[in-house]
Structures are given as structure tokens and as C-alpha cells.
Image 1 (tube, rainbow, N blue to C red):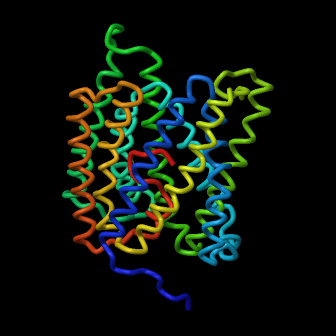
Image 2 (spheres, rainbow, N blue to C red):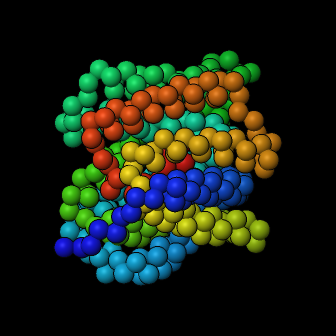
Image 3 (cartoon, one colour):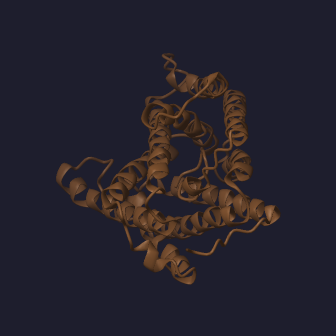
Length: 325
């Protein structure tokens, strides 16, 4: 029986969680900066490939590398990788078309979809309280999306509308990932879930290289980036790997139910980085919509804590809500 390595150190847990959120936003900013020239699948490759050595070293230091190579449900890892990689590509595509705070706000819809999918796919019982919280959050998402879905050609551009829909699609897929991970943790070690996601994301994104050559579609056509952009992409992979380790390590020192509300601080980091780096300020619609989404998410977290639902295992293998993987 493996020894329980968890400790009750809430201060350390919160510091690790907040650090991971900030690094995820830095990673997103680097991806956004490179998005003018690099297509999303190529960005996914850099993000996954250069995070892979960091994760391998981390697993080796934790003596979890051997367990990380053992897969009881191999196809389960493949499906988790397929959903997660597609969500990552859609998010990266959205980052190139929308302001960073807006992408973050729309991404907060993930826990809302997770509750719905848990009821539909896992048969979890969802009572009126949680349904009301989901409805509140989805109203907030619609407030954020409304300017992008307007028929007024002066209000939005077609590319921004596509970007918003891409991020919504990514949120839905991330919710499916969380549902899938809930099932995976029944048979799989956490190290294996982390290891095989990085591996499948790297391989799946690499497969798009010949597709881009064959189809000539700009969304898949890989490019030879400048040294500056290459540095952005490599840094995004390394930083993303460190952020993944920090968010996973935070759960060693505090329960997921305590840490989950801190995920919403990513909006502060996104707004700050968006303003300083890209000159982007969140609009009133983004701020008001994000407030409703956060309120709905916090209510869901509170209710699940009241019901004694501890999802720390699944939370260890997915990014914080509203952030790219």
C-alpha cells in the first residue's frame, strides 16, 4: 500500500496554486504573441513537447516514473489525450483572435458543462441548487459572448466570432476531459495520467504536420518561425510544464475543495498581463459576465464541498478553470 504523502499545509497549497495560475497566464501570453505566425496545432506541439522533459524529470524525482509508464486503460488515455489536445488547440486558436481576459472569462464555463455532463454521462444526481448555479454561470457566459455574436457588423468581426466559438468549444471539451479523468482515476495512477496526456498531445499535434502539407489549409500548415517566436514557443512549453507540476503539487498540501475557488484569480492575472503586454482591458460585458460565471462556479464548489464530493484526483490532471493546458 503506497504511503500517503499529503500534508495539511494550506498556506503552501495556496501559494503553489496561485503560482501555477500566474505561470499558465504567462504561457497563454507567449502563445498569443506567437499566434500571428504559428498555427494552433504547431503551438500545441511546442507546448506539449517541451513540457514533456520537465514532467519526466518531475516523475523521476518523485519515483513515479515507473508507475507513469503503467497504463491499465490504454485507450482511455488515448481518448483523454484526443479531447484534451483538441481543447488545447481550440484555446490557442481563440487566443490569437480574442483578448486574453475574454478567453479566460469564457473558459470559466468549463465547470458548468462539467456538472451537466456528470449528470448525463455519469448519472450523478444534480439537484435544483446546482442547476441554478449552472444557469447563473451560463448566463454570465452569454453576457461575455453577446458582443461577439451580434449581427451588427460594426460591433464584431467574423474572426472574433469564430474565436469566441472556438473557446466555447474548448470549454465543452475540457468538461468532457474532467468527466473522463474521473473515470480514469478509478484504475490509473495520477503519474500515468500526466505522462500519457503529454505523450499523446505531442504525438497528435505532430500528426498535423503532414496534413498541413497535403491540404495547404492555413490552420494546419506549419511554418518556420523566427528565432524570437521559437523562443516564445519553447518558453511556453517549459513554463506550462512547470505550471502543471505546481498545480498538481498544490493538492499534496491542501484539498481540491479548498483550492478550487482560487482558480478564479486567473482573471486578475489575465487582465494584468493583457493590459501590460497587449494593451487589452476587459470590457464591462466581460467583467459583469465573468462575475456571474465566477459566482456560479463558487456556488457549485461550495455545494459539492457540502456534499462531501472530493475530486482532488481529477483536479490534479487538468488545468485550472479558464486557463489553457
